[in-house]
Amino acid sequence: MHFVQQGNTLTALIPNPRKLQPEKADLSSLTILFKSNLERLLNATQNRSQGQKYKTQFNTVVSVLRPFSLYLHWDKDQHHEGVYYLPTKFEGWQRLVLQFAAWYISHSNCKSSLDTRCDTWRRKVRPWLDFLQEEGILPIGIMIPDLRLPKEQNNYGSPQILATSGLRSPSQVLTRTLRICATAPVTAITKRASPCSATGLLPIWFCYTSRS
Image 1 (cartoon, rainbow, N blue to C red):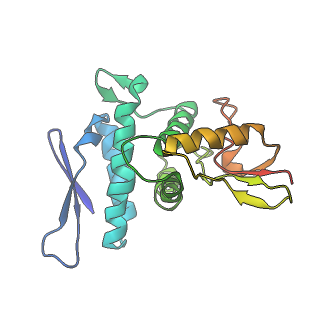
Image 2: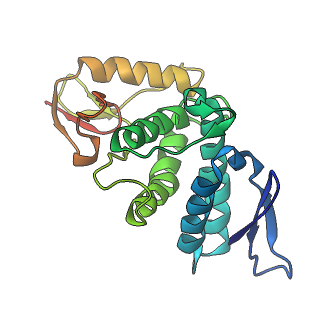
């Protein structure tokens, strides 16, 4: 996979073994990023795509890059004269990653269930963020949420997956998830989901173990 930019038009070219010409995918919304930030991000993504199957590369565009670009447009607090500058400090990166995760499972741009969004995050988005960290774009030590749905204890002490029946949207499920987690006695939180002293945030709904 490689990228071609002409002005404010950005296109991902994905080799398809069943076709003579590569598949084209529009990523123009990513051009909101400051030029050097965008180039670094695309170079890392292109390096990661080497040797990957067509479907994997296509999923990176659809499930990772496009949602990330939508998030960048949504996060207007970080806009400077219409341009989004990626953070330069640890605290800024931690905020971005946590905000992106929370947005990913609650935004209204897709109709996927919360279960599906969390699964997509774990299988597609988080590995991409991990690679960006390996490439030195994200600082070492940044907490990248796992986004596993919490379990609540039944009367017999057995864990049960959080019930979602009767809830109409992922945002409603997220609200209920937060409510349950906020009252659950938390005894263990994964290393990646530990409290962040830099931001003061504790996203305990991402992954937790409650006392039986």
